[in-house]
Amino acid sequence: MEDEQGKLLDRLFLTARATKPDTAAVEENFETRLMASIEERRSRRALWSIWAWLLVPLFSVFVIIVGIGNIFIDPDRSSDFSALFTNSDEEYQTAALLGGG
Image (cartoon, rainbow, N blue to C red; front, top):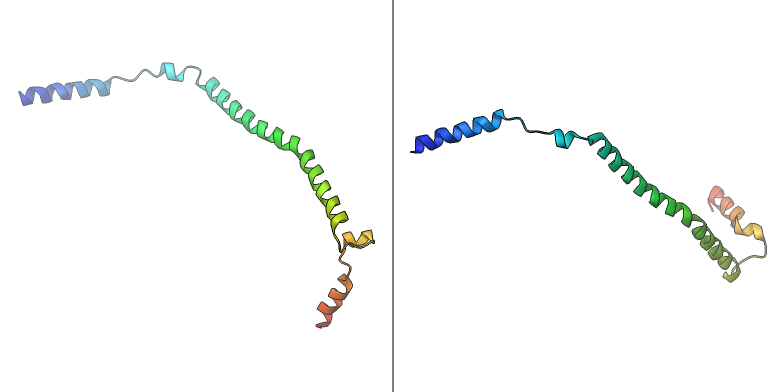
């Protein structure tokens, strides 16, 4: 009885190995589905890129407002507008650095 079941099982395995799976349904329109998937991922990424570029002016306005507020609220500000871009004691620091003092 054991031997008959073993032979039957061996025949079933041989039949299963000999039978090639039908992959026609999977292969059909594979390239189309793949390209559609890639395009969908690109469009999602492009959507985030579009939002980022749309928000750039808003953030720029925010930075400008904070900068202007910093100029007018800063108690140590100078009336010299070039002091905004350079340090007022820059020459003293350079001389101290080069002179070792």
